[in-house]
Every structure is written in structure tokens, then in C-alpha cells.
Image 1 (cartoon, rainbow, N blue to C red):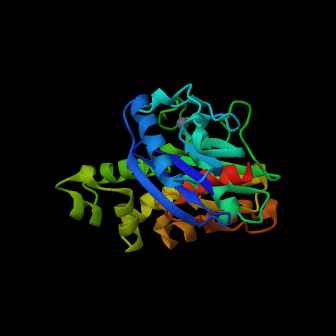
Image 2: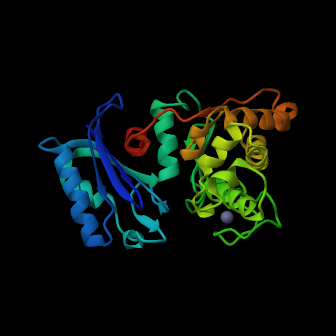
Length: 312
Ligand SMILES: [Zn+2]
């Protein structure tokens, strides 16, 4: 059995998988606020999941920058910064059988590892994955290798510059992709349209509480034809399409996989994006690169983390 352990800002999710990737047991607990609390929670989870069985492998997915082979957390800003300098493999050591593989990586790369092993990237040696949520995460497999770069930063597609003079991004740059295409960016545009008094079903629905408008609401209104919502989504998709087209020209990927909450939007996102990317890339690539949803599903964090140990 292989353990998959998904470390998130809100919850710790872990499960044990058989060799075919089926989750046999899984459990979720809230993410503790201290290192001592984390150690207790992690060891408790692993002990309950493994029981008497010795694990043949374990994989950890974690935000930030993690060294894959020795599982050391190098950089993790925010409320889980207590994990910086911690070796994640220490938590699982007592439950491992001799020769067990232990691996760790950031959560976006873990998600792509899951898609490579069991999902939409199976059989591909060149794939690009974007996780579309409040920000934009990414991971790249090129020539069969999951790219990490010199310092483990490779794949931060959300911080690809799409407009040199655009809004300031949390990374310190201007005009990063996620300042134009992300749940946060789309919500900010919708909010300003409501506050400006634009005639739209967004204003009808959210005039009393404009701050409660979500990215999913904007996609819903766009799907039902609201012109303001359509205009917001069209612009955001053009930025995403431009970024993906540029990446395809650089990486020559076989497939583009979209995960994360915004990928649930369905045809209103995928149809427009496929059209945009195809128009931008067809001359150089001479083919239409499939843009498809992630397939691993609901427990992608656990399956992805475990896949790091399968492939490690
Ligand atoms: Zn940025």
C-alpha cells in the first residue's frame, strides 16, 4: 500500500492506495496551527490509515517549494510556515517497510503526477497542466520529466507575465496571468461592474451584497447570456488563451489539462479557450492541441501525492 498525503492550508487529507491507484481508506483533519499539532495530527492520520500494515511508499503534496527526494520543505510562506526546514518523511518513517519510496513535491506537480499515472496525461511525455482557482498553479512534464527548474520554482504559470504594465501581483511582478485570469481577478472585475452600475444580471443579483459575488456566479451568468458577464469571461479567457498559446509554442506539449474549481465551468470556458488557443497556435504547431479537464477527480490531492511515490 502507498500513502498519499495532501497538505493544504485548511485540511490535511490522507489516504492509502493499492497498486492500481484505488483509495482503500482515507481521512481528513483540519490543518493544525503549530508544528507540534501538525506532528500529532499527521502521525495520528498515518497510524489510523496504515494500521498494522507496513507501507511500500509514501508521497506528500504540499504548497510552496519542497525538495522531492529528501522531502525537505524549503519555502512555505503563510500560516503553515512552521513546516519550513521540516523533512516530511520523518512523519511516516515508523510505518515504512524496508526500501520504501518516500517522495514529496508541491501540490501542482503532485496533481500532474496523478494525471500522468491515472488520468488525463496517461501515455503522454509532454503535457501542460494548469490548476485554475483563486490563483493559477501549474506543472509541466517535458520529455517524460516533471520540470522543477534550478530552485524548484518551475511551473508557476500563474506568474507568467501577460501584460508588462498590468496590475501589481502578489509575487511583486506586474501583469501576471493570475491578475487577469483567476477566480480572484474575475470576481474583482464583476465587483467593479456591479459598483459602476452596469446593467447586468450580476447587478440584479448582487447589488445588495456586491462582495459576495463569486467566480462561479460570473460563469453562470455568462452561460445564460448576460452580456456583462460574457464580456468579463471573454477577456479573462483571452489572457489565459494567450498564455497557453505562448507556452505551447515554447514547450510543444501534446495535451493541456485544466484542473481546479474554475475548470468545473464546462463548455463556457473550454469552448472559448479551445477556439482562442487554436487560432493563436495553428500555424506554428500545425495541429490542434487537446485542452481537456483533469480526470483524477475529487481526491486528486491524495492520488497525486501518492503518485509521486509510484513514479519516484
Ligand atoms: Zn505574479
